[in-house]
Length: 166
Image (cartoon, rainbow, N blue to C red; front, top):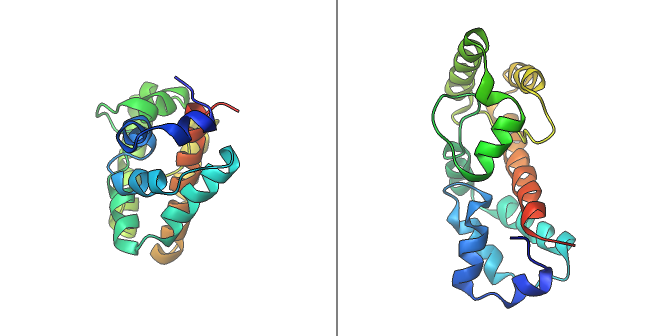
């Protein structure tokens, strides 16, 4: 159920947490800090706070959020937003060859970077995602960390737009 900013601002802390917990898997600290940042003027203000909360977090928290983000193209069940996003991108219907390529490149990426490949897949197809994975493998880990955190923010903001009306 989509809510207005006024409804969001009036939620109890418990109801806010329950409504916004699906934003980022296993990063409850983001939702807790977002609840404390209320009231929000509008959707843009909410997204600005969300972005700032993630940006100013320490690297250990960011790393944990990246590590716990569902892997793309893996054949393990994912729930909520991730399931719908990966399905829309065609990642639930990979051929055996595509799956093997994703598995190989994801493993290489994770060994190199120290966290799984994270990209906002909304609006992308599996070929573009595979291309981005290959291209980002050439980045150094420090640079890629910044890119991955920005992708995490993008994912959360896209998801917020599905929870908030107006």
